Length: 249
Image (cartoon, rainbow, N blue to C red; front, side, top):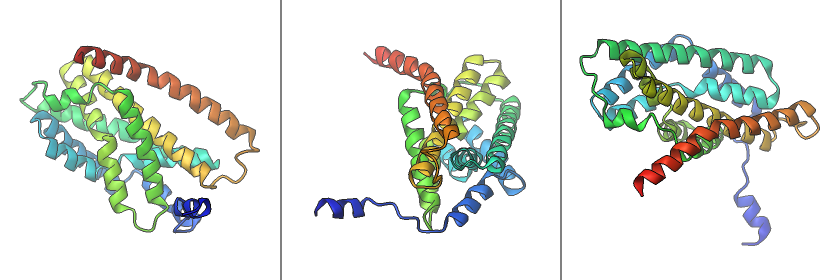
């Protein structure tokens, strides 16, 4: 294959119209009715899985959780300069955090089992590798959105980025007064959401959803801001990664 053929092979054509992609993102960003109840149910399943140390239950919860919709909506809205989508995603991100943490806290308050399990412990220390997984997950999620059939891709991203178990871990920390678990789980969730958003934002721009990105000073300022925030948010994960590496040696 020559260079031109290689370029063609790796091209990313939009299999659906931009309007349809926008509607899909907007629909996912809404957090009412079915999505809200799915969140509560998935938080319950994940909390039970973490409580009894069951990876299968945790994975099942991740598959049905609608957690990433508002994150992708907010990032896409930022990329295309759509204030409606940005506000919708941000508002529902806050809603899902409150509902998610409250659901898991209630479960762990009621549960007679308060022992720290291996599954719980694994979601309170976010490393640099988790940041990278989230970034790649954001890429994959957006590529799934612009395809005509994206169910398998989106399900795979939901499992690989593991957004829901850290929120359950934060709820466990509140219910048991263990603030190491609360802050560790919440940071794990934050770093996942942030880098999923960065991946979505990056691809939305690179694929031409924002035609005037290069000449738009607001977007250039946003790029600088996101770069700075990425560096700041990564600092704790770098420390944790270094600590874990030292402990293993």
